[in-house]
Length: 109
Image 1: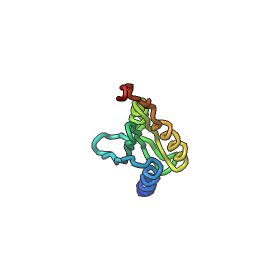
Image 2: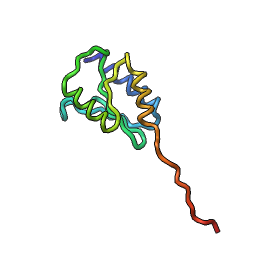
Image 3: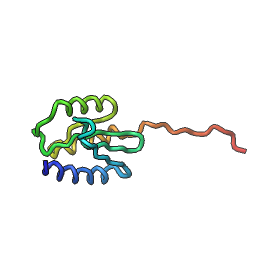
């Protein structure tokens, strides 16, 4: 578990560097069993990440359930050193703004 905590601490720093202004929250695993470790808030979007020290690390059934469920709501994934860059690229896409610019049509005096 110690290696996972070390990886997670570095990952949080990399997420904050990549997604400037984001908020990264660490979830309490005792509150809801299986809920992903991290919640990343960026503008009006969010992502949930379940960190693993390596790609083949064990996964609990509830972890898979919540990653799948939260991915249907916004974006969620398992993340490890082996797939980190791919997951962060997917987060880039998930965080892309889809807002339209609103132009005032009021007549100017």
